[in-house]
Each structure stands twice: as C-alpha cells, then as structure tokens.
Length: 560
Image 1 (cartoon, rainbow, N blue to C red):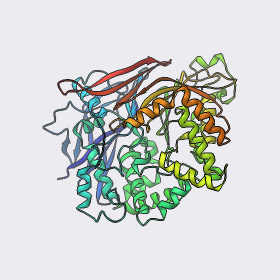
Image 2: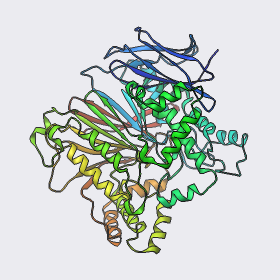
Image 3: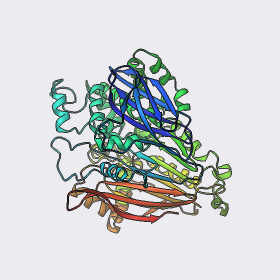
Image 4: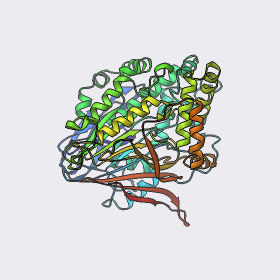
C-alpha cells in the first residue's frame, strides 16, 4: 500500500481550481477529494527513486472553503487518523474578496551544526498554531516564501550525522549537501515539522529560491562561478539544487494551464523515470541561464504578483553585469505593463487613482531587497565599480575579495539594474490605470524594514514601498543589528557618499528614506489588500512566560 512521505502542500489556487503536491513512497495514483464534491487525480512521476504527484483539483466554487482528503490508490492517507490539527481546506477567492498576503524568508528547520546565537521561536510554526487554534478566523490567503526555504550549506546536527553515514564528508563539499538525495533530506527536515506541514496543507504558497537553497553567495560574480566550476563537486551540487527546486518548489508555483503547456512536465510525467530529462533541463539551465525562466506571475483578483528570479537570471560578466538578463528584464516589463493602457508613458496623471487598470496592487517579489540602507547601497555600488576596473587591476582584485567576504551582491551591486527597476516601478505607478500601491517584497538581510522611494521630477500616483521581512527562523547576530541600525543613520549616509565618490559612482536615479524599522527577530509580514486600500502588519514570534509561542504585532499601518 502506498504511503505519504511528504505533503500535502496546497499550492496554486484560483476561483475554480487548485493544485495539491505530494511525495509518496512508491508509484501510485494520488487523489484529492473535497467535501463539496470537487476532486482531482494524478498518477505519480519518478525522479531519482522518489515519487511525486501534483494533483489538479477542478470544480471548486469561488468564495468558499472546503475540507479535503488525500487518497493514494484509493486509500485515505490525509488527514492522519490521529491528527491534532483541524481538517485541511482549499479556500477559493471570490470576486470581491480582499487579499491577505503573508511573506518572509530565511528559515532554518533546525539550527546548523556549530550554530551560534539565539534562534528563538519559529515564526512559521507560531503562525500555524494561531491558525489552527481558530480555523474560521483570519488567516493568510497566500504565503510567499522569498528564499532560503532550505539551507544546503548550513545543515543541522541530525542531517550532518545522516550524511556522514552515507559518504565520506572529508571529500567534495564536506558536510554540506552534495546530491539530489541529500536535498530531499533537507525538505523532509523542513516540511515534516508538524506545524509547518499542516500550515502548508491549508494555506496556498508561492516560492522562489535564494542563495542558500543552493549555496551561500550563489552567482555572486563571474570569478566566483569560475572558481566553483573548477571544483570536482560543484556540478552535481548545482544540478541537484535546480532539480530539487523544480520538483519541490517550482511546479507548485504554476497554474494547471501553465503545467499543461510545459514540455518538461509532460515528458517527466509520461516517462517511467523522469530523472534524465530533468537532469538535462537543469544542466541547460546552469550552462545557459537565459534558456530557462524561473520567474512567474500570479494574479489574485485585482492584485498582481510578479515573482522575480534575482539569482539564476544574472549576467555576471563585469563589463555588462546585470541582475536580470535581457530576456528576463523584458518579461518583467511586459508583465508589469500588461493591461496598463497608456501607463507606459512618463509623467503624472490624476487619472491614476480611478482603478481602471488591470490591477489595484502590484507586488514584485525578489529575494534580495531593492532599497537597502544608504551606506550598504553605496558600498555595494563602490564595490561594483572597483570590480569593474574603475580604479585599476589591484583594486579589482581587492574588490572581488571584499564582494565575496561581505556578500555585496544585492540590486545595488548591479547599478544599471537598480536604476532600471526604479524606472519600471515609476512607470508602473504613474498615469492612467496606475495601481494604488507598488510593493517590492524581499527578505535575505535578517531584519525587517519599510523604505519609500522618490524620483526627481516625477511623483507616481501609486504608493511605492520596499517591504523587507526576514528571517522566519534564523539567528540575528549583534553585528547585524548594529550594522543595519547604523547603516540607516545620517553619519552612515555621509560616509557612504564619500565611499561612492572614491568609486566614481554615478548617483542613483532616485532617492529613498526608511519609514519603518529596522525590526529584528523571527517575523512574518502581512499585507491586507482590499479594494484600493492596503494595510501592513509585522508580527514577531515570541515566547510568553509560560513558554507558549505567540505572534506579537510590532508594526501596523496603512499604506494606501
């Protein structure tokens, strides 16, 4: 009898259909049955001796929530008979419903070997406990996980011991993840957590990778990539990382129609073993990143989400370095402007508030923040100039060492891409059909803050904000707290300007100011979008005196 190894994860949902992802222990037919009669089936597919199914569920009724169960070859496997959680449900949005979008990044399932610093309660576990305690109460309509869902380079004691039992950890990547099988172990460790498993079974999720999903500083520079490719273990590591990401995360990001049109998904499902096809795809994606698009779009009523790949889509050559390759940048602009009518032109317009565009709220998800503390921004821009040879070969060599050591590889380390994203956001927020808000959602930097930009000579009709929230569950050393607090200060800004002058850096095309934070802790940020209004709430996971973990609101404000 087939058994459930991992899942179910409720992934895509719209008004009439959904997808549910599962991993099973053998080939089987997976079925989802809903209490209202909606249902769907899918036969499992095989990757590296693991079996998976993504079940499309049709016939759902908009604006309803229905309980569901999962069956394998006709036998019920979810919910477990001894479950302490409420039934999992599939909730579909109605035409007039608002949206509650919760997001965050950077989650250790367990602290890594030799980890230092206080980790504290897991914000995702704590959110799950709150939703489970009041199943009919307010819950997120979608959960956006903005990178570092697993840590391939910072593993727990238990995973380290398991790896040491299957291979020699003195060779290759040592006690980091080496292959596909070891990646599956990371997902088991993270998603078999009872609270997280139940939460992901009942709240739809969208995901994108960041560096630790593969390795710290992934694609920092061309020199970094050349050094990694010179090792005897990197090829297996990166191919396994991309393969596992496609199976465990990317498939569920796509709609049933997108899946039906995906030739790789068709090939994998029809093959007796899809490992070779997926491996060839991953090898092509690694060799030619422009041949694959990991970014995707989701529309939730009148809210548009564009999840942007800011890791694998980079152009790393120093003389043409960009965060997004030309095709990716063109795709992003097309998705932003679709349905905007005349909104692609420059200049302000009072008609931007009439709500007649394609969407009322634009969310741009990118694992790496666009707007950083001013000192950090200037240092990254300076470093990009040094590495590009602005001060000669000696400074270029020093700049590369500094770039890797200090993780200087955010949007500000790609100055042309930083400005281009700013121009696109200003265009999106200006003119006829402009949305009420444009929000850049990010994580990575292990604290939370709100920053708002302004452009010389133009004022967008939309409220524009950088909303950064991390970590969900990770350590926040004192050095990070002090460094980022100082980075926003007036003295730091003056210091940054001096550093930028040394690099002969052109000033950025916009300015920005911090309007909230910095906040430190394990946290989740939620945007509540209703009509053309938007409200932001930041909650941190904390332990009460009795040891109970709760989410405490530390910020609650209107955005529009």
